Image (cartoon, rainbow, N blue to C red; front, side, top):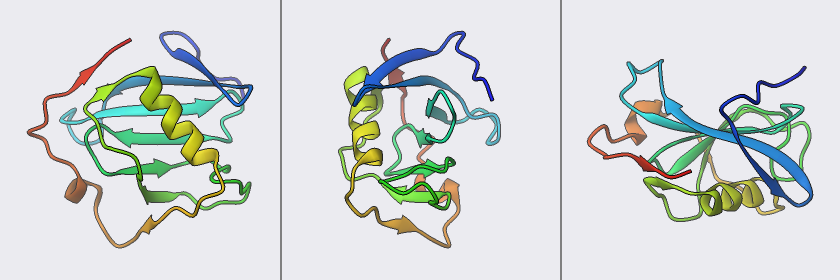
Length: 123
């Protein structure tokens, strides 16, 4: 399946190309900004609600496993409201690493988000 590249930023990590962008979350009434990162084949697909302490994995590849279940995982690096290519690179390296991620269970997404955050992102 082809991916839409228009309006997306490209980043190369470990010799693989990824696309990323920041957009308003339509599911929650556009209250929150989401960072979306995905590979060209969409096997790697992460969502970071800006300012939250977790990421959402929607792809098949996560932390060295190709059969990984989708879900929410604590983000081990510092949370930020300033999205930079360095931050995106850090998330990609962590998500492709061999370390064990802590999975979140039985929580609603809105419990981790703070709508009072002022969102900044840089291209």
